[in-house]
Image 1: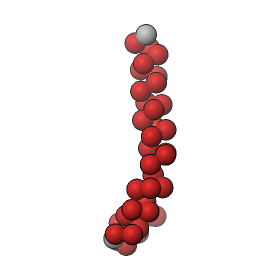
Image 2: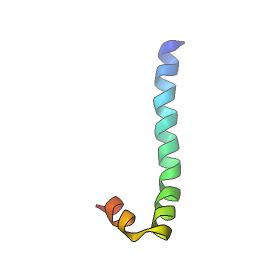
Image 3: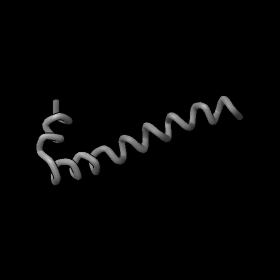
Image 4: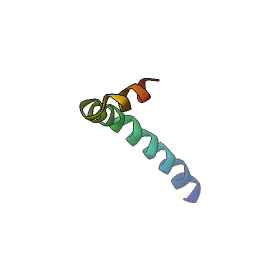
Amino acid sequence: MTRISALILPAVTVAFAIATYPTVRNFLANNTRTQVHRINV
């Protein structure tokens, strides 16, 4: 069980990061252009 949860947790974290990245990027793009420039680089 510990081995399975040790694999599921990072997978969920990565999936969550991929799912939220466009939203976060758009949020930063709407607020500050310096942040967007930093992300694009």
